[in-house]
Length: 231
Image (cartoon, rainbow, N blue to C red):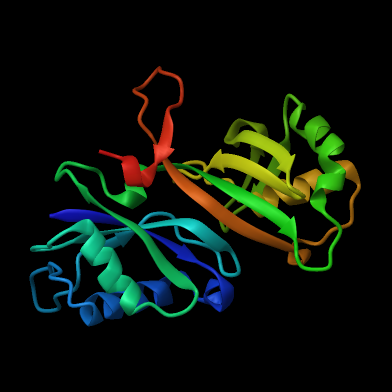
């Protein structure tokens, strides 16, 4: 049986890297006495996979992991059992049972929404809303991506699905698939270069609000739904 767990990561825990989060959840599953399924072989491990790894320093209200279990009573019981062994800064928000044929969370990610706001004491980003609209109105937003092997010229505009200002913060919906994966900090840096604002990324708190999958078939318009609702 496969279950999908949605959780939040915030506070001091935002500085914990992806591999350490995996180890944390492996221990939490044991402490919560979840009847988890293990792989076979000489070194059995819990069958667990995470959706889109979160960068260090980024908070989130929309993280996902899949877990295979041998048995369970009810999703709400598993949620409560896990939350009893969580530390401050990690909270399980929901648990959903998935059909066996559902693709794993990592392979299902298509997009993610983010909120970017000045850290405490900074000027609200909302003051830049007019220039933000002008930035997004461009036909193309060129971006040079350097990898270990090559330099790639990209058009960021293709991977930015929504962009605007609300409640003193920048909100964006961007491509988060393995083939696209637009980083919100890159969009912010390109915007600042366009608008002439001198706000370092270190002054910005990034929060992932939700992670989505695309239910549309090939050739159809994008149909994004939260990973929790995938079936």
